[in-house]
Figure 1 (spheres, rainbow, N blue to C red):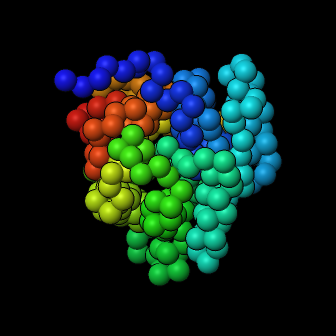
Figure 2 (figure 1 turned 90 degrees about the vertical axis):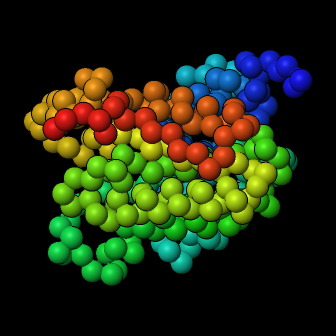
Length: 265
């Protein structure tokens, strides 16, 4: 019979690194983990975003000022992805190895017809979303506790199963991310590796949509779901926290999309 555990303390004092933790889903994962007693490091591509996020986290989770820090880590330049990740991992493990790593980083999605794509454009669209998690997986083992209680969680997306027009590259890289997670689950065992696949989630990325169009866009997403809603980053954070806490989940995929894959157009 297994030893009983205190469920509320599973993440207490756990060291968590969230790449892309300055906004959207990543920010809420960091906030959620902090609220459960974890010690959190977040990364962002820009110092201003990082500083603002750290200020928000310290305000939203009282008493967490000494439990959260951050570092800039730009993954947009393919030649510097690996050294930037190494620098981030070394910084995050100055005093102790990591228990969990969450990858939610992603640059803006610029949709183009597949007929207009060339090799440089296709490669550039994968720097953050594909090469980033691949290289992270290759480096992480040296910076993580070698235990089934440790985990890496990657992020794909519902567009893999149900892509819209113009999303071929994004869908392809998302499917590749899920493949990376399964491969890493084997290569890094006993460290667990899983994926969360979000549907439409109302994050800061929606700020790029003109205000006059935003209500119609949100309404369209709601109609495509079974819950008549658009996801929130707070809701999505639950999936990432589950994959950190459940030490029997590895090579798994959690879909959080409001039932949009089942909804009729």
